[in-house]
Image (tube, rainbow, N blue to C red):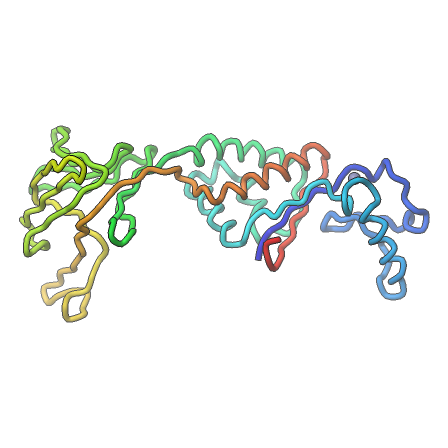
Length: 286
Ligand SMILES: [Zn+2]
């Protein structure tokens, strides 16, 4: 499923409508020009109308703009992105771009959508996030978004904080002194990594600089050798990634830009003509 949007052109007032269509000319609830005549018994007239409207003006089917907006899956990702950022900033976009939304979007709402798309570009889309990855599994572990602060792991044993910021991974003492910083590093643990006082050595891949402490970065939860999620003592078990790296990239997925680009074209056409946006759900992206 995909969503397509279109805006009718403004040529209707300027073109000569054949007299046989004129008494029946009508814009239906979906925003399309049609003739209000039952199809049964008027098949020929309907066919003639279809042929006429296809070339009635310089715009095919009197359509000023038509854009495939998004696949259903991408549209849901886009909606989540807006929700996560701040739904109060994007009320019109959230309402009007729902896949289930079938009503027309008036030009006034299209103007509001353009304004919200501008906010999206200036905030969400240009916002960088830094992610700490398990380099071997390509699973993300921690995420840093400037507005929400560093994601950190504190250790009372070491009086240390571990975290990620825009410059990468860092370890700092509780007094705020930086002990270790790296964008690509290894984590080496002793024989019993789950022990409270297990030794951990962090080594920066580029410089070879090391830092020793007792606070490890945990990965995903794993089962005990007998297949259970907890042992008899009720303890849970985690994997400890060996190779890790950080990466900064725009918070909004680049591959969703086609959605905002299409929406801008369509909204602009609606604002310029004063005509509403027509939404159509298709079985495949055209
Ligand atoms: Zn036209």
